[in-house]
Image (cartoon, rainbow, N blue to C red; front, side):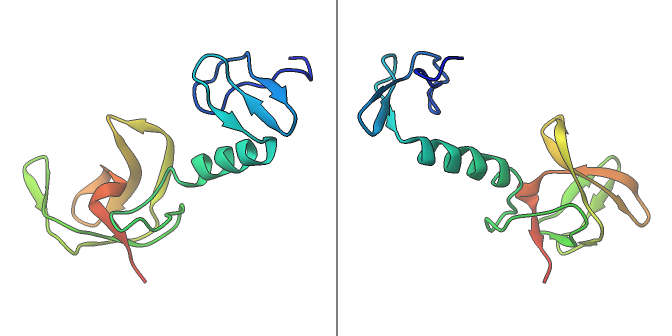
Length: 118
């Protein structure tokens, strides 16, 4: 990529061009600064794993389920504490947490059905 073009952070078009202090996308008309594009990319990376309350999750965190969940023939009750979660970069059927739960074994959960335990 040449230094006179930047990909659009909104639509990923490779034809972004600079006009004074702004970069402009000719395809979606989005305007941005290079600093804003870098901040947006950082926010997207860190905002991937938010619990039901919007709190950032990290691998190793302890969480609690916020509702009853059907797991095979069993039910995982609301408020069940889950220690040492592992966040998945490549989700499994929309589930982005891998964990082990006593009595159930290995389970996949979604960030939207847990809250970070304090």
